[in-house]
Length: 293
Image (cartoon, rainbow, N blue to C red):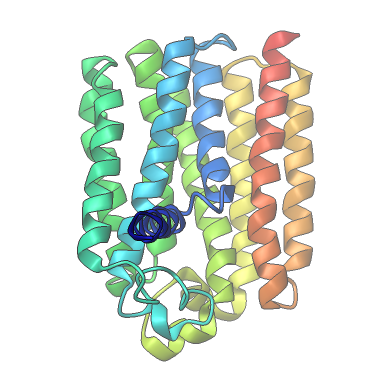
């Protein structure tokens, strides 16, 4: 009986840590992973080093999880008052803040251990990544642009992927990085539109609030710029028609997302956010086919 109770308690803790790390919601991993794959494929001309690919992918998974944990720790006073987040483990009292901090540290240490097997340049860049991931959740207290900061943090996978593959960060990497920063700004604004009413009540800042009635128009302009930057990447790398076909599909997805958020309905705004996964996928498929052909 005691052993059964102990096993159940262990299973419950593991489950709560799993949920806290958002491993039960892989959409965030995919959205973060696509830019890293774009970067690796461009850096390697379609033939990434398998070990580098493995480390980058695992690093993305671990740091996304760490980011979710520290985000919930930072928002532990806000989440109970937001409909979408009130059942999160810390907000619901199922995981203590101290436990969350320990989990964050462990995830970061494992990710750092993986990075230590790469070159010195990438190791140095990992400190910037850790700072961005750890500081992002607190930005919504001080600025209406936490979504832009998220883009800066998420997009850092691009220069890290280039440095890991070729030990340098060429100009095309920064063009791609800017595209990713703006892309994250757009899809996280769609995500923030879901919580806009609750955020206004509790005083949390976001681009959804900052953009106000012009949110759709501003995001549309940003999406045009993103597509333009992706086309520029293709021109700089002399990529072939499959890449541009992928960018055209991604453009169509942008139009579809605009249609979804047109009336600012929460469920449809969240659907538009989820659809961003296909944007990243379309670009990657086009990119990989371009190098194959």
